[in-house]
Image (cartoon, rainbow, N blue to C red; front, top):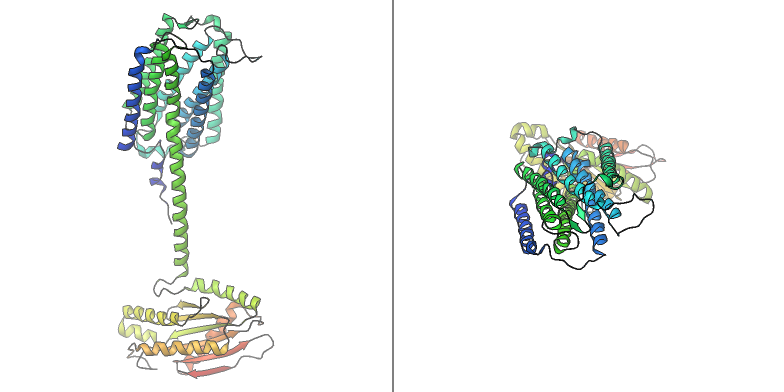
Length: 490
């Protein structure tokens, strides 16, 4: 079974073209976000109670979502080797790392000895670095991603060592986040005043507006870069929610712990969750496809095994399976101390039949003979085989000389009873067969090749004696003399 990998690459979010269903779901998500934003925006400056547990819950959830999303994207990169996927995974790892660092230095959240001392503007600077960095990763992802779907599966040629690229990217992201953190703490004296106590300054609003415009630019670039994949569509949803997050939590509000700040943080968590949910659903779909492909492959392997053991014309077992089965039954006969019989059959004067009636009639004749021989196999262990050309064989486990002779006689009689005309036969007016039988005693030291040669010798004797009859050889054992030949006319 040949699997066309060129058609399988559409299963990934980053290479699957966005259909109407994906666009519809994305629009619904954006519409709900817009409604919530429009309802909340007029009340963004409303002061509400400070909830000390909100920030740790928020940042821990955000870090977990972003880390899992980055891991899933790194996993897709490991398969597709796409540079754009590597950058997007780096972007989510950057937000996870920045969120974690932001939590460590957030006022009153943690008190860990040995950490750099945060100043009054440290958390604001970290927030701005964080929210300005992610849109830049989105822009880089958009500009580098393939412009055609057909190119997406071929990008593995650009990056040969996925593990090295992933490790280098993780190290680079951690280094950048560490640099921002050190600057925001040790260099706090050089940071302008963005926040007065819990209120955003005018300069802070200007910088945050610039960051919002940067995020809007990233969204527009992503939207204009067509065609869109499923991943592109959901990234647009993420960036829309990201814009609402910044607008409510940093621009339209007055500062920390007002309604806009809380709702904006919830928007940020939603932005981190959207793509994660889609990736997890994709993983479930991929697993279902893998199970389905495994089942189909198993069925195909079974069908292929049957085909490799079956003669294409007659439907009987072929020579390959005959050799395997005979060896197996010889071993069983020795183990169970039972005889094994072999019948070799040949259609009499078949060449003249083909010459006179044509090859199509010859094929039809072989099919009918094969059906007759198959009907002589009454037990599950009996096997009828097309040995080659017009020659057939029957393997009869646990069968003595008398039993195999009766089977061979029955086969000759049944073929004759079909009365297939054979005008050029020198034996009978109808198609007939000759049979040679041999019995291997369970205590005989004899190979499969020797058993076949013995049965073939008996067949030759039957044909020499006039055809349309059975020639049999007595059981062969180590202590017995050379087997004698007996002829039994039909």
